[in-house]
Length: 372
Ligand SMILES: Cc1ncc(COP(=O)(O)O)c(C=O)c1O
Image (cartoon, rainbow, N blue to C red; front, side, top):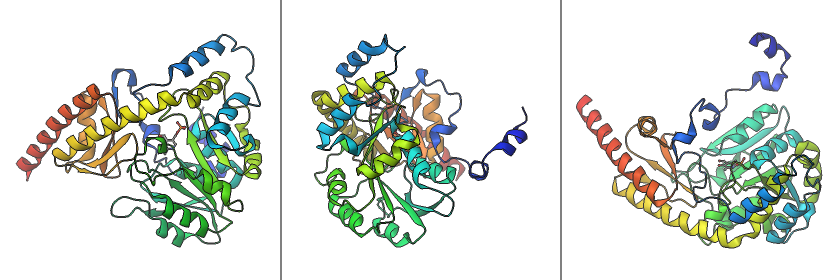
């Protein structure tokens, strides 16, 4: 079929949508099974054995639909956050829920305020629905510029996106500042807090927004949660939103209600209840993060303090060259926003990563000085 023909059938929003900024959408035919995964912030420490057991226990009954009410998964979430299940929407990863937010709330003429660099899915969501992303740069320390975002809010603003801690920078905004922001944000603006990495945080003031969402009842506050990161279930595809019941009721109309498969439901419920495994992952991640931060700093890289399972750093040589050369050596990391990002992994992988990047940076510095 001719591409032109398909394009003529497309809805205007998609036809006019600029190319995605999401690196993962542009990776093409890479065989990831042959690479060491340090590029997508996956969890190399693995998921809870109880989650695997739960998924296995229902796999053979895959010919029957799952529980449409999602009693078990929503029950586990409700217990964890002390909310009623009417505050919860589930979906196939938080990416699918970001799409649902777009379907429910965004249209042509709307503006979505965000800081860059951040996780760019929200830009796709805005543009897919005809809305315009309004981009504020991060501060010099690569933190979200909360005042800068507030200053960009006007009568056209429908949504503001806050990724805390932020991907790809790893930096965070403390609770006091976030709370002030939430209170100051006008009532017509949906505040989306993406807490994909918050379980990894070490700072006492890097806190979840669930209490704020419960307390500020008249503010449309939406909290995006994923099972892909600290719970190690990226391939299972499960996530959820915490929001006031009136918002949840609307999101339930956007293809979210029956989306989550039965394996994902029982696995995610078991993972949330396995607090012992979560604590172990956090500990292993913290050790790996500290090792990578220390060793990268020793190499002379500018390392940004991380509250996540990845480290953002400036290698002071071309980041895309570093990325390509690491790929040639079988290690998948990321190059974006003028720097590199590496996800934590087992200590063995981290040591291999440091050995290889040490050689590559030295090689690149040498060739730069020869050509200078
Ligand atoms: C900040 C952030 N939010 C959401 C996601 C996507 O999560 P999910 O796997 O639940 O779609 C990612 C994935 O890397 C992310 O970095």
